[in-house]
Length: 290
Figure 1: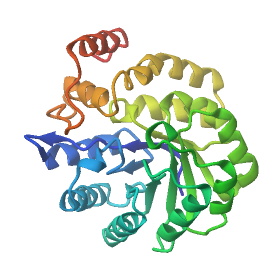
Figure 2: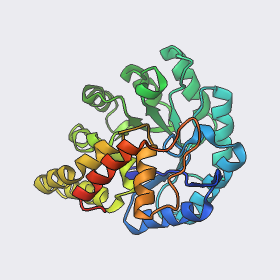
Figure 3: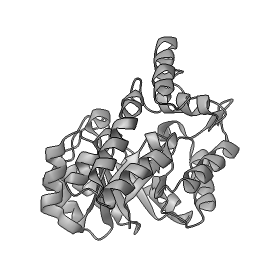
Figure 4: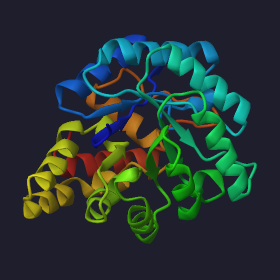
């Protein structure tokens, strides 16, 4: 069901409101460039700052604009199981294809607690993509727990962003085709595919969807040299997207390119520092993006 370059869509804001026009235009831009899936309301979409009304609207716009051309995987994670279930029911009612479920942050549950959390979400009856990002959540979803979860029919994939190639290889070894392995780190897209991964949930593809799709396509067609060259060309941009907390750099770059109207983010995130913005501009110019 899921493979390729799947964009973790930013949520454009204008004067502290969701910029619906920019959001719809951004998704259309992604589709035109051949992207393979859309993730609205993930952490790249600043989901913790969205009200439930805004959440519903962003997902609704995403589903309507995509119009079944590619899968829509709505972020619906929370560090409260009850809230994650509520968001999942909401997303299901809006017609998404699956939800992305981040490991509950701050609480630091045991592996058994994580299993029970994701099982409760799965019982809503919508396909689930697990999301492991210990650098953000403070806890790692262990491969052994992933293997247990993969036995549940609703658990279809994992976005693995631990930064550990070994962990990805272990998940692939023990889950095989039972669970789709996606990386959540643009810079690990090629290494992940070497480990049997089937794509990436990407930040950079907000800005460079065509380039990310080209790299993926080269790999799938067996042209390893071209895939490596494509990766090398955009690698500095992959790194630049994390000069500050995501999605500050990517929104700044997108606004520079006119893809969205404003680089606005919501507190506690704030606009990029002048020094880092100058460095980002330099990297974009060297890459021929500006």
